[in-house]
Image (tube, rainbow, N blue to C red; front, side, top):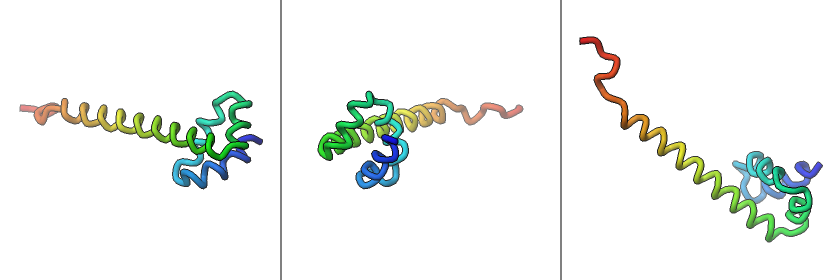
Length: 80
């Protein structure tokens, strides 16, 4: 029920990531989520915080993928 009320509010702030951010917010304590529903400024701040976490994770994953590609040798798997 909280998610049904929270999702449309999050969607207004971050339409593309609304489902993921709502899920992250629902992991918080129920009283904190209720506060977010009542306070647009608090919600905006928490959504921004969640987006920052998601951006950091995406950057780490991109960096790990680049490191893995950089470590590949062009000769790997070739038979002489």
